[in-house]
Amino acid sequence: MMLKRQNIRKALVIVSFLLFPVIIFYFSPYLIVLGAMEGIVAGSFIMFGIQFIVSIVFGRVLCGYVCPVGGLQECLMLANNEKAKGGRWNLVKYFIWTPWIVSIIALFIRAGGITKVDFFFHTTNGVSLYEPFTYIIYYGVLLIVVILALMAGKRGFCHYVCWMSPFMVIGSKISDWLKIPKLHLKSGKEKCVGCGKCSGKCPMSLKVREMIKNGHMNKTECILCGECIDICPQKAISYSFRK
Image 1 (cartoon, one colour):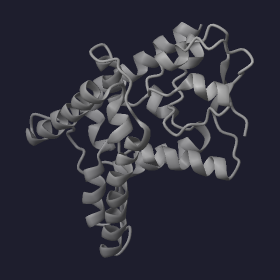
Image 2 (image 1 turned 135 degrees about the vertical axis):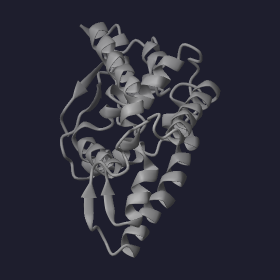
Image 3 (image 1 turned 45 degrees about the horizontal axis):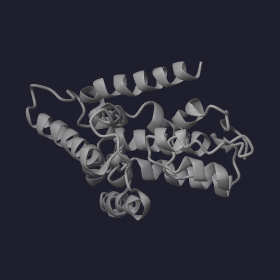
């Protein structure tokens, strides 16, 4: 059952990656800015809003189960399965995200506020031969993901660059502050034998064994993929939906 869950999860993120040429513009930070200049809420704006809302109840589970870029990075683990350093370097993405958000707010104010919602704003063809420039964008994004995965380690893009994860981290934090029941990992440290298999398997390079020992499983970089749950021979980790 546990192995089947991981097979399904990996199949989902890989299929999501295969669909990336079709859905890439619904994850585009540029289209949000372009729409804001005209007072238009673009499709990617709506998608990021959905990610934020989902994270309040389900944390970063979308990163682990449906993210197309995550699917590519899991394939790249065959080439580099080293752990990403993480730590303070995880803050890099917030230095990218914060001015981006501020610029979006400023552009909407300059445009006189929200005037229109257009889910298909500049997304008619996706990556199409009719617009060759879109291939530059598409392969440019893939190149960044590949370089980070090969040089920085497992899911390097998620750690250092991803402009989507801050939405889910903030949503998850809001859930904690308001004490809303949320999907999270639960440790049974009395069962743990310290084998370290959980830490070795974690795609986000988290020190899961230490997390179990400390009884603190709620980490912002955890994508709730369940790899640590399924690899643990003593079943010392489980999903929980309580406060």
